[in-house]
Amino acid sequence: DAKTTQPPSMDCAEGRAANLPCNHSTISGNEYVYWYRQIHSQGPQYIIHGLKNNETNEMASLIITEDRKSSTLILPHATLRDTAVYYCIDRSQGNLIFGKGTKLSVKP
Amino acid sequence: NAGVTQTPKFRVLKTGQSMTLLCAQDMNHEYMYWYRQDPGMGLRLIHYSVGEGTTAKGEVPDGYNVSRLKKQNFLLGLESAAPSQTSVYFCASSRLRGRFTEAFFGQGTRLTVV
Image (cartoon, rainbow over all chains, first blue to last red):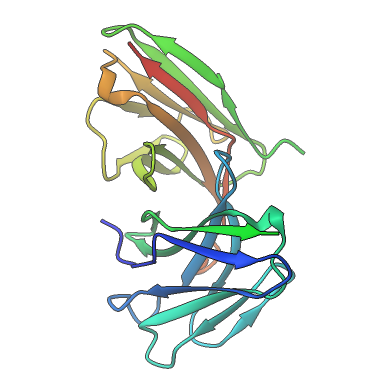
């Protein structure tokens, strides 16, 4: 079973920041937190990962709490094309285990 | 630059029929995975492989078999299809770099068992 917890859905206005939370209270100390997204019914796409420090790349920023029990994915200026299901993922025995994710709807 | 390619993209089977789904990757990745996704659900791991000639069970392996005879290919077999196996199947591959895994996914195979 997935070891992460996310809200089932969120809305965001186009051009605003989308902040997607995730609880991963059972994550082990040396495991990364991964974020993927799935647009429509396409294959999931890697977004970002992090261990302890905050991370940023061209797609998003990742804020991880100091106790590593939760994190927030930030899309700084959401567009309509960011409408997707976002998965916060832990690894189990080296494999990515997906939960149900958060369905983000970006509205004009 | 194909990445991960799944064949076929769509298939309808009758209950009891068999079929094989093919996954091919051109990135020389060691790891390959098969997931299934049911409506409104996340992906569930069926089987995976950590290298040529090796396979292992994931979360939901029953009713499926796999083979990894060549590093670039990972085959998923259904010996006797059941309606409960109606799903979208995704293949993925990754190269483990230390503790970091970035997986690349195919576009999926939509299978309907009637």
